[in-house]
Length: 85
Picture 1: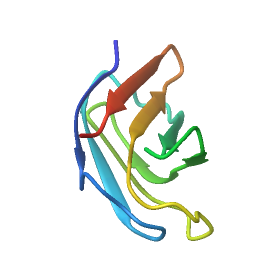
Picture 2 (picture 1 turned 90 degrees about the vertical axis):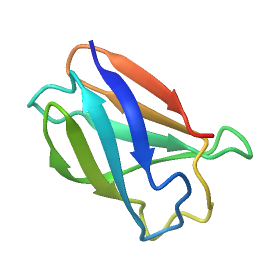
Picture 3 (picture 1 turned 45 degrees about the horizontal axis):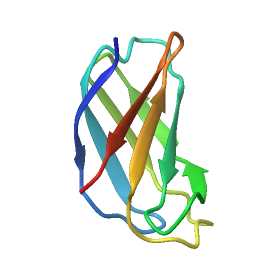
Picture 4 (picture 1 turned 30 degrees about the vertical axis):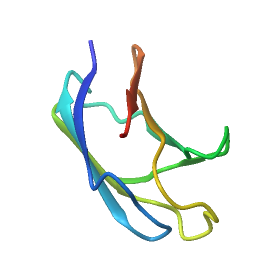
């Protein structure tokens, strides 16, 4: 089961790098959706690295939102949601 333990940094803007630390992500890349706190707008993280314990990526430069609300990791077998506070 995928378990998100921490997202670094806890706020991000377009073009910023994000690291997601946890366990059970698997070795087959899925995708990461970032939902902004001001509503249901979301973008897909541009994933640059994926392992069973860490996912790294960049917020798309075309994103017009700032901040992180929820980070949703979708693996081959499941979906895991982490609320950034």
